[in-house]
Image (cartoon, rainbow, N blue to C red; front, side):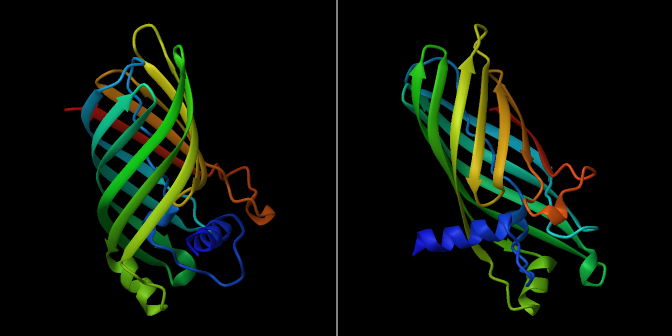
Length: 229
């Protein structure tokens, strides 16, 4: 049953239908990348604070979303994988011009779990991971959705991703992953861990429906930064 629900949500992202559904604001964003520490050895534990800004792609032309997210994350990296957990909070504005020029706000908070099993091959690693985020989302956009009988404050998001990383001689780690699931649909991202700082860039392509293929729309961009505390 859970698999069926997941496939329905994913298909609604990639292949929009005739009846418009207003998903939670976070649904239009992308997951954060997995924290991968340097050195192929067990027992590396760190704590990070971070934030990212996003301009998620929306179903309809002339509409836009802008959001910011903050994260408190504890990470553990071993020889066979990485796992991180913590708390994420976010807020955003949704300009719904096709619904009476309405501009709605939303904000939410919840626990996050991110992990991957990885195969180390010298300085190179490859693996498969999963991101899980449960949250409560409120704000004027929530009540906007309630008026359309679509609002529910509790949400669960799950995405899978292949991940690849390479450790340079200075212990910097460059990693690449492509998320598949919710939020974000299909969203590749690249990050670099510089020891005390992590920078990352994410992208979600334009919708697959030919109606939305427009060279002026590059899709969803997300830029993030985390620092060790």
